[in-house]
Length: 401
Ligand code: PLP
Image (cartoon, rainbow, N blue to C red; front, side, top):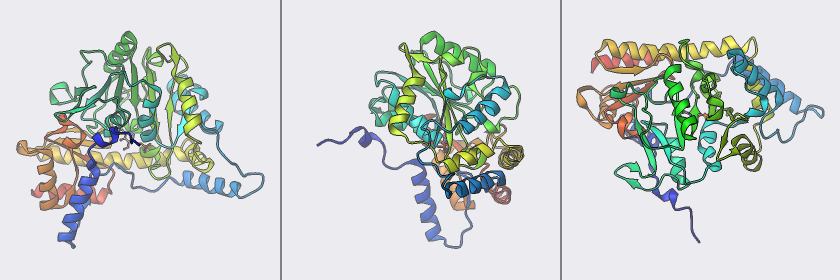
């Protein structure tokens, strides 16, 4: 009897468990310490009222004979698919049909599961540093190869460092599957249309597929920055886009997201829309009616300003962090069209050493950049997802360092 041995290749201690362990140990040794957590990538503000009201109504409907619903459609209810198509795409001049949208329980599941429809023979390219899910899920299915000196043998790492302006460079060797995430987690950096067009052109020329994670699209306010890869010429023949309501409307606990696979997109002559539809119909039974009604309310006239207020709140925190750190002389990136602030640890310190310093000296918790990949060493991530009060307090404390 054999297990999937690829799982044994993955380090058992995941980045965030390591952080939690260190914080727990510190708290046990210093029970009165007031620890401020700015390492989180989780929403903290309550759900918008329009969302909770819609969910309450949906609960009441489900308790009636006429309103009861069983299994939802695997790909999403028409009311949500149409709201997404109209508001997230048509309103930006992009034509995405309801049958190109797949509603799911999360962008983590979708970015992780998408590998199911691709052969293990494909080469994978990821940014470095990177959201760890892209790499780990390729390890689990055996596509990443073997670990050699902290890197996977079949993965092309695209360093995103100060030298590259924190943007990846086109890979010298052919990459079949290219994971891009903008606004980026962890660096908070964005990509403009001209730069993204180079990736779309590369993918179309090389027959590659771009797996575009736009989970933080709602944080973009600069008109030069595309919200969707489908704003770009030719993207429909080379890209899949992942979106999430998690950081848009506080759905990290409710769970709802969606993935766009254009009908035009083929790989090896096969429609990826059809393959994903088959995959979802077999392995996924849809998102609850109550959740989807909640998601639909994000697009309502009441919901829109409420959602914007929450995003503005996190953005204001991110700005407090980035401006505050800059004034203290730190080298800081991101934090404007993103909830994430990426900073260089001072005096050439290693990421984990800076983590320990902040925790032990001023009780501020962040995320060590090295946890996101080799090129993250020496960097550190703080987020705008805390409370405004704690964010300001954390800055005052860091100033005392
Ligand atoms: N993609 C990126 C880049 C993320 O940072 C996250 C969450 O932190 C996700 C996807 C997960 O989103 P969801 O909550 O929809 O699973």
